[in-house]
Length: 437
Image (cartoon, rainbow, N blue to C red; front, top):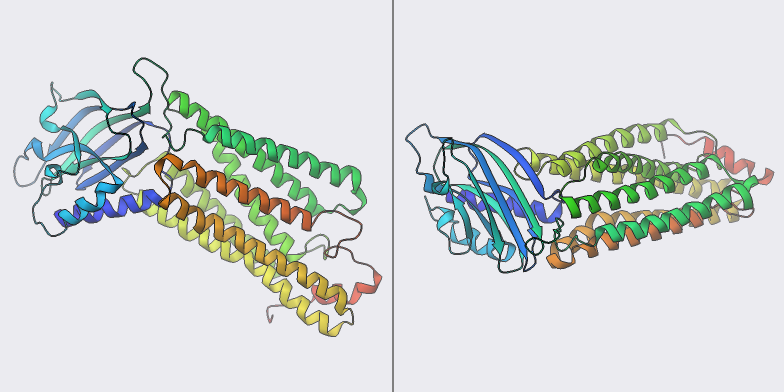
C-alpha cells in the first residue's frame, strides 16, 4: 500500500508538472467505486489570502473484508517540496497511512462528515503561500469510495473579489490579449503585402498563411477571454468551446502550412506528390486526435482515471506530428541537391537549397523549444512565474511566424518562388520526385 501511494504521488506530480491541469478552479466531480490509494484533484498556487472550499455529498465506502475505519479516508494538501520527503518516507513502510505523515496538511477525514447521508462543506484558509496539490487518500486496503466532490480554489480577501487563477497564471489574460493584438497587426500587414503591394506575386500558399494568422489571432482572443472568465468567475461560461475550436484549427493549419511550404506547393509546383499527400493524410488525423486529447485533458483533471492515458497519448501524437512535418523539407533538400548537379542551374538551385536548409533549422528549433524547453521552464520555474513559460512560448512562436513569413513572402525577386523559362529543367526535375529519394 505504501509503495503504491509513493509511486502514485510521483507519477501524478510528474505529469502535472509537464502537462497543464485545467485552470477552471471550480470543479464538480463524481467519484464512483474508486479504489485508488491516492487521487490528485487540483494543483493551485496560493497567495497569503488563498482559500480552499471542499463540499462532499453522497459519500459511501465499502470493503470486501470488513467495514473500513472512516479515519483512513481523507483529503490533504502538500507542496511539491514536501512531496519528495513523503515519497521517501513511505517507500519501504508496509501498511503505513500517508494521512499520518508530518509533511502533509490534513483538511478533513471522513470522521468529520455529518448528517445522513453524510456530507461536508468547509472553507480552509491558506496561511502559508505556496503551490499546493489537493489529494484524496484511502489507506483502507481493498476499499472503494464513491462521492460527489466540489472544490473551489481562489485567492482574495474575505468578502472581496476572488481570483480563481493560480497566482502564476493570473496575468495570462493580459498576455494573451497583447499577443492577439500583435497577430492582428501581423495579419493586416500580410493582407497588405498579398493584395495591395505584391498582388501579382501572391500564390495560393500565401492565402493559406493568411488564414493561419487569422486563426492564431482568434485563438488568442478566445484564450484571453476564456482565462479572464475563469479568473473572475471560476468557470469559462462557454468560451472554452470557441477556445478549443480555434486551437484545433490552429494546429491543423500550422502543420499543413509547414508541409506545403516544405514541398514547394503552389509556387514551385502546382500539385503534391503521392508521398506528400500521405504526409498530410497522416498529420491532419493525428492533429485531430491530439486536439481531442487536449480537450479531454483540459476539461477533466488528474482525478479522472484516464487522465494519465490521455496525457501519454497527447505526447506521443504530438511527437509523431513533429517528425512527420519534417519529411517533406528533407525530401525537398535532397531533390535540390540532385538537381543542382544535373540541370545546369546550380547557382539558383543552391540558393533554394540554402533557403530550405534555413527553413529546416528554424522549424526544428521552433518544435524543440515549444515541445521541450517550454516543459523544462514549467518544471524548473517557481509557481509564481508560471506565466513566463507561456510568454516565452508565444514570443518564440511569433518570431517563428515572422521569420517564415518573411522568408516566403510574396515578392518580385525571391529565390524560393522566382521561376522563369531558364529554370524549366529544375521544375521538371522536382516534378519527378519519387520514393527512391
